[in-house]
Length: 52
Image: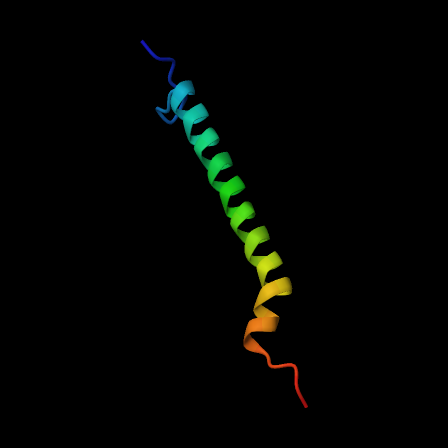
């Protein structure tokens, strides 16, 4: 029988939620870093013409 806390959540469930949110945050940061790098290095050359 799982050990339940005051609100009825088991330790395994809380650990699973914590792990899932950590993985999601890591993926979100990775996506943000890749997009920021691409915006600085690539998008400026594609969308803005370097002419007078």
